[in-house]
Length: 161
Image 1 (cartoon, one colour):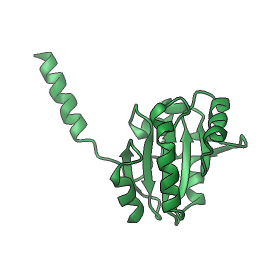
Image 2 (cartoon, one colour):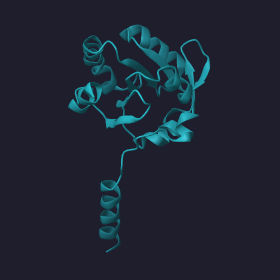
Image 3 (cartoon, rainbow, N blue to C red):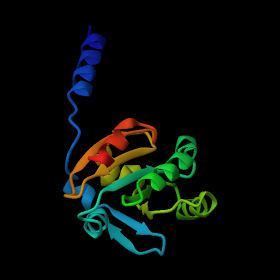
């Protein structure tokens, strides 16, 4: 009986999750590193691009699905050059992250999650899966919260909004 109640509870909770349209204060203040080792917060990054459409890609160099998606991401960048592309790495170390940036020639703005997926930004994502794609509109609101494949049609739909 307990097992049935637990499964039903998990199902109800899973079905009632509502995707946020704003970043939590904790997510906004989670620390990241830039490629030149400066410490920044997500709120500073978003403020830099306020008024512009942003595609955020949460990824890691060890993630096969993330790397497989790089060519499709490059196609998207060519098709939508006015979008700002932000890559947030959950790599285990800075060296692996920087090595992958060079190897795969990923263009965009790059940040390293100092606390990884265990930090406040990772908690905000409410996910144990990467890659993860979010689209932020010109007003700073999250138009797309949870896409796990770069080929997800919702990404293009959100970029066209």
